[in-house]
Image 1 (cartoon, rainbow, N blue to C red):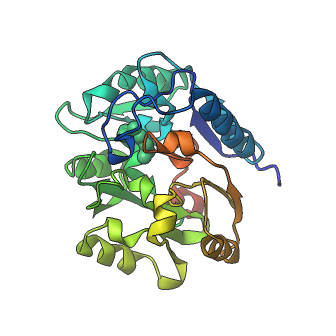
Image 2 (image 1 turned 120 degrees about the horizontal axis):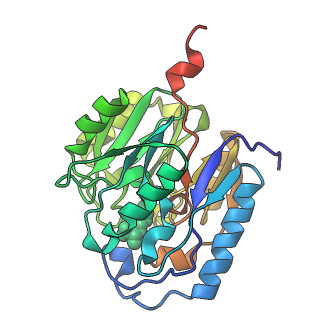
Length: 283
Ligand code: ARG
């Protein structure tokens, strides 16, 4: 693997990870069923793999917030600003001040949602990798009213997408913008209007459509750094499609985190998010 450490990702070690409540369908039947030492090995394998191609920063773990390993849900970063999450479920709300403190320690400008508008960070808000565009999911966790607020604060166009399958309750469980303008996604997780909106914005040859089996293996929950993608598992067909698009595919099993409803992408938050238009702007 080539060393390309210009991108940075935030991770939180699973020192206190467990499934101790049920706030999504994946957690049902899994309370107290995650193997902590296996989870820690799986997490380290992801971290070490990602650290080969990007910078990984770690925030301190804390007892009593077992889902804080899913740093994607801490907020949405764009340049030097971060929109802090407001968790829908009380079980995760104690993570908010911890993420806030970490973001502030990094000198990020922290923007906060009004108290009555749930927003679950980069779980439901994904920057396109080609266009100056923010894709936002709603329907399970993030409130649809978060979209216009964020569009105004960050001065970015937002495309809202309605999520309709409770198994794919965050946008990043079924949708992944990739380098080069590719988009990997599971269409059935979206309502018809959202499927149309996606098709209108992303040309067919850039759409990587994932079937149900790959989607249920959390293939769309992919960490992308430059030409590398890290995911729990990909079928041979999906792997071939990704390779054909120019990506090096790294499978990194994350069974214990899937019991909590998350995989590779959920365990990371991208901290280096330049604006697309700045990159193309004339000097
Ligand atoms: N148990 C966590 C929850 O339900 C899992 C979060 C997964 N994160 C993600 N970005 N999809 O909130």
